[in-house]
Every structure is written in structure tokens, then in C-alpha cells.
Length: 223
Image (cartoon, rainbow, N blue to C red; front, side, top):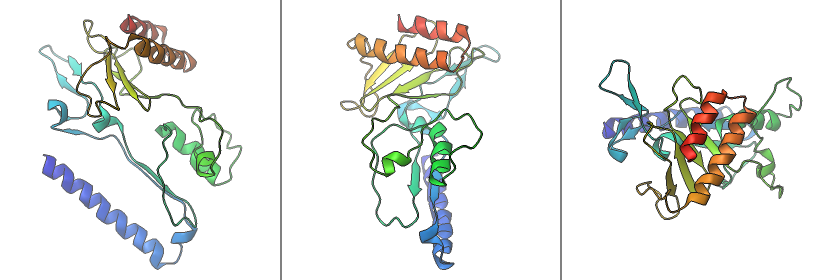
């Protein structure tokens, strides 16, 4: 399965190369803004899992969700600006909700008539020194109460906090700098970190008008 997955990635890269070469052949590559993003990833053996989300339980229609590690959640976002000849990597956290505001901003569209919850990345491209507003990034299959036990991954540059799971499962915290593969739960030793990240997540849910039952469930997970 890992070999098949690697082959799919290589095939995607091959045909992406054909598209980029065609843009060069017709003489418009330097004038284009090219945005490359992807869907979620999959486990191919990492954390003893194969797939992306969950496995079936012993009862009919029972779902046992998995923690969503970086192998599933961390996806590429590559943007080539018109006339750009040299690339660089940005350290700020971004989410898919930021893609549309970024593209609109790059196109010079200031008032699209839409309510946008994301943030444009263009100021970062331009070297802005203003603080980036996104302190945490969230990822979950669902934040609805329909599946209350689905895990949510809460990410900062240093920490990754997971809230959710079954009734007896508490917070799971990984230190990205010391444990980049996410193998050792250090939540018990870093309760202030868990509380700080968790409380900010609750404020995010409230701002999104999430159902009170889900907010209460996540609050209980914080202890």
C-alpha cells in the first residue's frame, strides 16, 4: 500500500510537471499566479494505521475515530507569484480557509461580496511585519455534535493538542520540537499548555456559532 501511495504521488507530480511545462511553452508561465494545494493525507503504516479517519467498532454503525496526526492533517500549499524566480518557506500557520482570501487579494479583488473567515497570506509575501493573526490551526473531520467523539487537532508551531475520543480518553499533547512524529503524550506534564490551547479552541467554536453541546463536550475533555 505504501508503494502504491508513493506511485500515486509520483504520477501526480509527473502530470503537474506537464502543466507547468505547457505554461512555459505558450509563454505565459511568468505571468501566472499558480496555486497548488491538496486534500488530506493518509496513514500508510504510521501509528499502526492504514487509511485516514476511523475504523468500525463491534457494534453496528459504531465508529471509532483516530487521532489526526500530521500525516493526515498537514497538507501542502505552494504559491508561485507572477515574475517570481526564487521560493521561500513561510513559518506562519495557515489553513484552507485562508486560500480564498489570499487568491482574491493577489487578484486585486477587495470587496467580493462574501463573508470570509480566513486571512490573506499576501502581506506575508510582501514582507509585512504586522503580527500574523492566526495563533492556532484546527483540523477535524467534523465539529458538529452528530459525531461528538471525533478528534480535533489543535496546532501551534511547538505543540499539537488533540481533544475528542471516547468518554475515558483525555487530552493528548505532543511536543513537536522534541517529538515530531507524535509518539509520546505529554499532556499530564503540561497542563497549562493544554488549558491555554483548549480554551482558545473553545472561543473559536463559540465564534463559529458551534452547537453548545459540542462546546460543552470539548470543555469536559479539558478537565
